[in-house]
Length: 96
Length: 143
Image 1 (cartoon, rainbow over the protein chains, first blue to last red):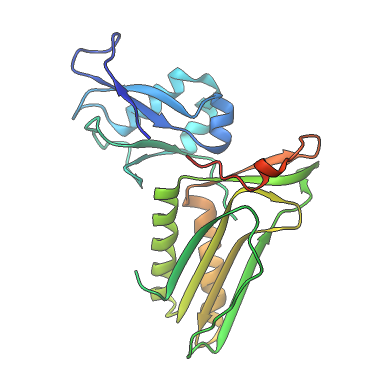
Image 2: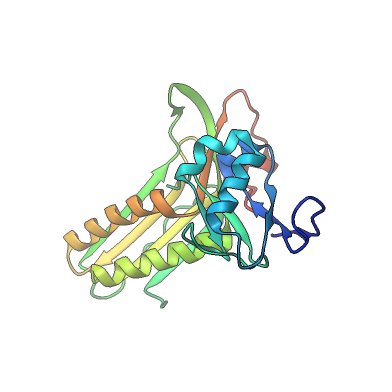
């Protein structure tokens, strides 16, 4: 689930969007959702990963091996975001 | 997607398998993953699995269907637990049916490697000092 709200600190055109966090990374972060600021059409997936690291120091070590999912599919770090997508951090996976 | 590919996420440990091998399956290969009693050197009571269901299901279905076509399987069946799976219980099952054994064995191996690398599934150890109650045992923790 993605939450959105207006952001006081970010640019007036930006949107505050929640990134879903799972598994060991949710335990490291102590939460299951972290808000990031997205300027529609400008902020990239890579920049969202960077914001996650800035928002939560405990996640930093795992971020180089993590990917962002946009609407349930992996995207590359250069992909610009619209700000209305469902975002999720996918890292430290371990099924089986 | 078609009936030759079936994928299920199941709350808690998996039940005993029901194998309904299709006609044409000269080889039926079943793989099961079970919870080990040790995580590293620490004793655990269970593993707690988490999924991101819309993405996890899509990834498992895509992976199974691609390997079915690449290895010309007759069918492939995937089950994975979410929630707590106590030691010794089954959390993952893969059944590949093919005309001959080698494609089925290869498909099983490739599926597991790719799943562990890419699929949105997580596991967390539940250490023995942490009481696993009945409510927790079968509860999916995915959002």
